[in-house]
Image (cartoon, rainbow, N blue to C red; front, side, top):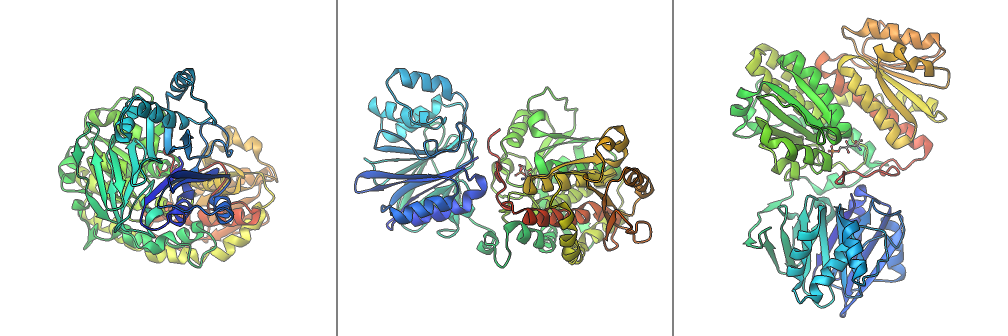
Length: 608
Ligand code: M6R
């Protein structure tokens, strides 16, 4: 995934680059580096590990200069090491940072080696530096060299380039990987994400695929894929800068869990009024599209996929049309059958997930229409979909997705209502569902009050190596999300099962060392779930139950119960998620893992 940042300014840029990298660490944190042009020379510093290691190196060896590029890496080609850290250079006068993957780097590298280029890293990126140099040797300008190089690259990339002979220019280009230009006053910037640049500007320009931009301190020129000069709109960042700060919270993840009551308000704001959905929130073309939908195909990854699974239960129950859900990395590579009238619904916090984007691109011409539910306005997924609904959760920094998931669920319920209107969901039912959604801010606030008991419960997991999560019906995907949260931040191996599947295999794993976490709302499946829980107890398994019904599940030896407040049944998947987020958080804190930046992961997965 990696994060890139670059700056050209009248002031020294090293501090701006470092702060930008800190804000991009969610994209990867294996190594970090920067290259700054000062007095005709490029100085480069690279360090293995987090951005702080680079910051410490910069203290020892300050980099002056008004033009620079920097990078925080999530290793794809070659292990995390100083040699593989970006920026990569060709000779002493050209430096490149790259986010994405150059799929054909091996043949390109062989050709370049045959022509005498020496490679100092195992990365795919280094070919870009040498290709640029090769084109410069042919007498092209740097912009021409970049265009020529782009025609040779297969895969996805966002690039930042500086050359010692061009102290007034920062070049950038993108194809398939995210990149924004930050527009300042007498200074301009590039970054993988707007958050990186919020300390220096709130005005942003998004590049289209194939664009090249030449940034000077007081002007930005953009050339499209055909080399024509084009204007790209400048937009102002919508969320307050505060949301990118940790405030009084120990971790971003905890802050983001606690933001959920407010986020529930934000996702509903302007979308419902007087007990009705305001369908225009999906865009002016939405109503005509919804009229023709005969089935829904949802495609997403990770947490967003789990949200899609919840929506399948809702859409098939409340709308009565088929809804298929598939992880994007599978969907994109198989010959999928898309019956007439299919709405392709992509779900993504970032809107830049490579597999989800590829899935959209793969089938967009074969479906009725495409709808993106996303947290980042202006992201690739949103721009490339016919209609969209923003989740309005504000920036999510913790790698473990929390508020993005619950806000996606609300957006999915709004989508369910929009589709249901065409399939017999009456006005009374619509009003009932919306009244329930409007209770969410208060309900989630009440659930946060369970933080103390959940923290106490977390102590039982500190020494465990495995855990099972159980749920039934619409709570099965919630159990999956609970398991994902626990494994990604506490490194405890966790799996989720629909509780009815237990006796078909996983029950063999149950003993006193296998904690079993169950989500047990008050619904028609409760008695069946209780029977499954008895099966666990009978094998000596210790149960941790989040229950929606005081009367029916009580604590006893080996059975720990936390009761949730009463709530309308439709809110169960949203409400039962929050305690599972808190449980994972507290277990991770007890285990001393890096909660916001768990090992081997990155927030935005812009490579496949
Ligand atoms: O930005 P997206 O929602 O498309 O990201 C998809 C997954 O990478 C993401 O949900 C991931 O599974 C989370 N880290 C889980 O907490």
